[in-house]
Length: 256
Ligand code: GLY
Image (tube, rainbow, N blue to C red; front, side, top):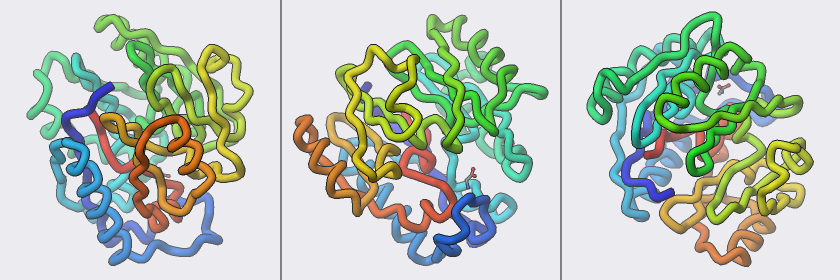
């Protein structure tokens, strides 16, 4: 689906204290992270997307991963309820921003005991796949399903066993094509898709199809070659500093 707008949030200095399951990669270099974030914005703009840039928020180390605090579509927006306790209150700051794009009536909320993070939600046309993960629970998916049904969208829950978020390992490109790694290669929920398996470059599964071009993390040549063979131009963007916090390309924006 074509994308007209994205919302991004500048990384804060406190990002060096962000959550990570890969401490062996080291702490992010803040200056480099800012430069990479700027390149991400420029990549989006080069594809015809209008970028709304939110200021850094030092209270929340992981707040540059703005995808997790909302799920958006052309008809509505859902403010999530992040399952990571240190990230839960990040949602407060996104509400006034969403109100610039959606009416108050079309902005909804996931509430406790439900939890949901946007990184667990992948849209394919009028269906949302929602990962049942350490961050997103069954009650969160139930609430999300009820909200989205009102707008004619279907939700399919996908239990996860290996990855942090659903889109850590699977991303929809276009034309029924999915890029998959790890546990997503064999998942029944994605049986009807035309799947392309990432060859030992699992991190590159988190890519973004934006208006006919695929933004890919830099440094994954096998995946880049595969996507080019599929017929799409590739725009590599370095995300090394966000990877140190389990973050990828999709985590850094809300797209609509
Ligand atoms: N460090 C990003 C997250 O765990 O949500």
